[in-house]
Structure formats: C-alpha cells, structure tokens
Length: 196
Image (tube, rainbow, N blue to C red; front, side):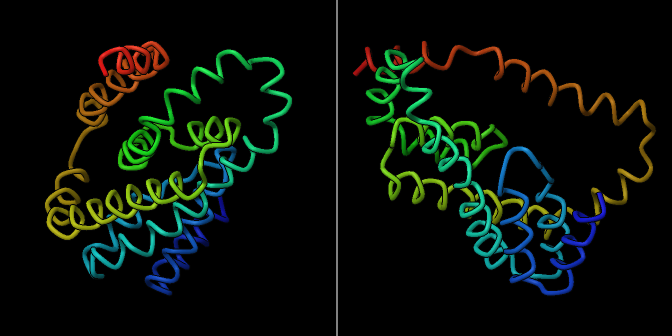
C-alpha cells in the first residue's frame, strides 16, 4: 500500500507530470489495480480539469497498453486453443472494435482485459491506441470537472454518512457491475453484426 500513497503524493506535489506518472503506473497492468479516480477528482478542485484529463488520459492510455502486449505475446498459444472463437471475435471487432475500446475506456468497464483480446487477435495498434486515448482523456476530464464542481458538497456530506448509508449507496453500483459481468458479450456482438 505504501507505493500507492507515495505515487498519490507525487501526483499532488508535481501536478500534471505527477498525475501522468500516477496514471501510467496505475494502468500499467491489471495485476496491480490502483484507483486513479480519487486523486484526479480531488485535484480537479485546484488544477485545470482539461489539463488533468489530458495528462492522466495520456498516462492511462500508455499504461493500459501493457495488456495489449501481454495478449500479443501469448497469441500463438491462445490461438491454437481458441482459434475458431477468436476468428469470430476478430471479424466482429474489425467493425466495432474502436468504438468498443472507446466505450470501455470512457467507463469503469475492464478495458485492460479487453485489450488482452485485442493483442491476441493482432488488432490494429493505431486504431486501438487512438480510441483508448480519446476515451481515457474524456473520462479523466469528466472526473476532474466533477471534482471542480462537486468536491466540497460531496466531501461535506460523505464525512457525515453512516456505514449503513454508504452501503445503501453502493448497492446500485454492485448491481450494475453484476449485470455487466453476466452479459454474453459475444452474443451481443453477433446480434450487432446480424443487424447490419
């Protein structure tokens, strides 16, 4: 836990370059997840939300691509075992892949796991990175603007919430997350392909 506290301190001390480094490290691999949203949100009060979105978005996008290269490195082994499914996935992602990456980058969906798949199927690196970069910049700018305009209100009210109230607020987040995890994303992509 000490390294994350040090990195957050670095972000607060060095501003935009510090938040870039924090974003890079937080997104470097899905084995070491760390929350970037809280420092970006809090720094939105005192820093330019646009520049925060840019610096943390670029750092996040670069860091996330470690997952793409992990997938690319293991592609031969995975293709031998799941070749048929991955051929279908490749076909579907050629049409909707950039939008899907953008959507995952813009939301809390697990974009690092998605990028492993993109690496395995050898999806165009420039398309994937551009979509990831745009989504991460936009998401972090939104978070920073939210911090700019709501930090004092939220902080003042969260401190006074009881554990029961906090639990009630987290129920919708857990339900939405569970719903998203239960979806058959391949089936959804096939239906999208059939509609076109």
